[in-house]
Length: 613
Image 1 (cartoon, rainbow, N blue to C red):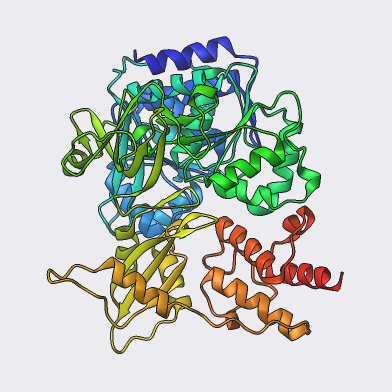
Image 2 (image 1 turned 180 degrees about the horizontal axis):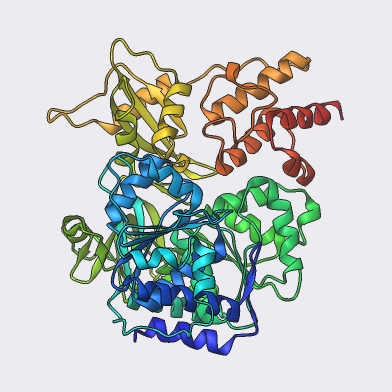
């Protein structure tokens, strides 16, 4: 039995009566254990041990049940974004080459009509309202079809099963998270039982977690920060996982109020949420001021030092800044909470790991010199799934090449200074330029695309794409956005898409990115309407701001425009729009304004009221 499996069993045994998940489908450790035991037995009966099981559901409790059952049954969970467009999901399902799939019924229905989809023998729908004959799809062993027809039925069929772990080796693959996909070759990070257990032990010790801890983390489970630095961390520590809703900008005031309501001790979030929190009025200054709260963990993206300092000073809290990648399970460097590991502006020091900085030839550099950051430790990935070439590029002699440029000061603190690779990190989300370019090139009329990142005070970086179109093609940016979202998830959508006649290239035909950025700077500007106080002027200014954020024409916006009707209107762009409105009209939105802002009609009413006041 792996150390991870043993730790899961021990936690279930020690914490049976305690609350594990606080949310729409809350549960105790004992209730989760019963569900996991039932599903693990189903996995064993259907011979899914040693195979990959795709999980794609928006239901937190179902996902956590699947993940734990896979770990204990010796299966490998491949966790996908259930909101991803069908082409992207299809590419990842094919790449996973799985023996089973547990997914929202809506996801399975979409995939049923996808072209060229690899057959997954066992498929279990989640949230299918009525048990319809044949809705539980089994293309292999037909005996399973009689057992249940959906996820709830599977659990009911095996209720009372005894939880036990199979003989899983520490080097067995616990899960796969895909960091890219769509039209390029999907890159799946494989994490072993050994690596996941090592990371959890570091979290528990460094954050001081125990059965009195209550951790709020609203980040998605198909990203490592939500899955490992939330669900698994709490499970092994015996802590309570507070997750009452998914994060959207309008629930920020409620989230701050709920910290006290749920006696949260640790908040795990991203810098963009901290930036929005800083804009709230002074009535929220005491949101963290209660005895149980310990600190905030800022993860997934660069934490700008002034934002870090202002949040600590205003709210009277400690912000722990951490650094890591999906390839290191989650984190590898920590600035806090211990004073000897904390320095404002840095990503701290390695804990339970090693780090060094090297030059282009791999020679280790001294203090103060900038080079590529390499890390080593038990928490490193096993490799990229079915991609030995990509694995060999980054895993060398036990060290992982992060692709980040960094320096170390004389006291051993590390500072990230830039990126060597093309990866763009925007608001905590990883965006791979070639992934974006592949989607854009698949759009009719687009013959070439190039994507790069630019500094952004709110998101750390923003993705910008330049495209070259056929002579006869004349797609608008709005049309390009709409077709992009038919092919890929919104998190990959660049903040701007700019058309150029051609790309500057060197002798070998490679795009000269510095020159391309210069062309973008001269071609990407948009005229701002003159500001006035008339009804028409206010409306024009608001629609211009919204159009620039959402990358569409103001003519296609109306008071009824909202996230469900406007492509590109995501939780992140919603935050960006609110900040742009504050800057454009010269006032701060109140918490009431933030909660009311659900459509452009709401925004217009808010702006009118503030101007009138």
